[in-house]
Length: 468
Image (cartoon, rainbow, N blue to C red; front, side, top):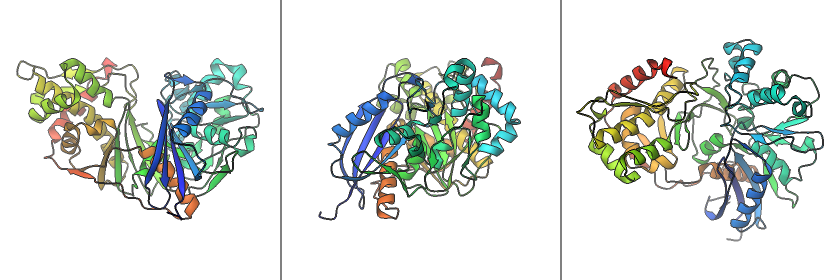
C-alpha cells in the first residue's frame, strides 16, 4: 500500500522487551521482535537499552517507521545525576526493601487519608517515592547526587533522544501516577513529597508530562517519540477499553484495573488511584499471586496445564469445601508481604486431584474477584470483564472466573497488548486521531455465579491475619 504508515510500539517489561511494528491506519501486524531482560529486583538500566536495540533488530529495524512509543513496567526508580549518568541500579516495582519507608512517608505526609488525597494512593513498597526514601536513608551519598528521577519508559524514551539533556526527559500521566509524588486529579507533580522522600531541597528536573496524543521528542535518527505509558495503561489502550470495562490480567502478578471517568482516592491501600493513557483514570488493584499458582498446581498434581484444567472442571464448584488462600509469595493486596499460602477445609472427601485443582484455580481467581469488589466499593462502574494474560489461556480459568465474578467474562485473543497500546499511542500522535483496530475474535464465557465460594474465601482471608 502506497499510503501505509508504520509505527512501532514497545513493551519494556520486567522479564523482556517486545516490539510490534504495525500499520497506523489498520493495526495490521507487519513484524515484531523481542529480547530478554536480566532477572532481579534491581537492574542496571543499560540492560534495558541494549535489549531494546536487540528487539528493534529482531523486528527488522526502524528505517521505515514513522513514529514510536514506549510503554514499560511501572514504579522503577532510575536515579540520574546532573551529568545524565545513572547513579545506581534501578530498583524495580517488585523490590520490597522499602516497605518501612513507604509507611514512614504515609505518616509524614499526614496519614493514609492525606497521602491518598494528594496522590490518589496509599504508598506501598512498589511506589517510586518509597524507593527514593530508601535510597535517602541507606545511601545518602547517592541521594545527594540526584538531579532527576525517571521511570523505565521515561529513561528509554530519553536514551533514544541521546540521553544527555535532562530538560528533554518526558513521561505521561499514567506512568507518573505510579510514582507516589504525582497527583492524577490535577496532572501535576507533588514536589513537596519527592523532596520529603529525598530528605533535601536541591533542584530537580522531573520528566515533563506530555499529553496523550503528543510527541515528546525525536530519536537521534529523527523518528518522533510519543508520550509512552505505564504497562497497565498501555494494555487498556491496546484493548480499546472504555469506561465500565475492567481488565483482569493474569501474569506473574495479577491485576484488576478499570477505565474510569473519575479519580479514586483509597486510603486503605487496596486500590491505587492511577491515571490512564487517554486523559481518564485507571484505578487498579495488584496481587502478587496469579499464574504461578497454576504452575504450583502442575507441580503438586504432576500434571500439565491442560490436565489441571480438566481436573478443575471435573470438580464441583467450591471443591467440596476446600479453599485456598494463594499467598505463595506473600501478598501485596492485602499488604501481607510475609504471608504464606493456606489450604482450609480439607477432609477425606475433598482430598483428591479434582478438588485440589479446582481449589487452586478458584483461589487464584478469588483474589482478583476480591479486587473487582474493591473497585466497585469505590464507585467504579463495571460493565464488562476482559480477561488477559498467560493464565487466561487455561481452559478452566474463564469458566471459573465467570462463576466467581458473577458476570460474563470476555477473553480477547492472546496478544502483546501493552506493546499494541504503545503502538496505538504512536498512531494517535501521528494521525491526529485515535485509530480503531480489529482485536480479532473475542470469546464469551458465562457460568452460574458461586457467591458461597467467594464468601468462604473472604472468611479465610479475614481470619488469617496472625498467620502473616
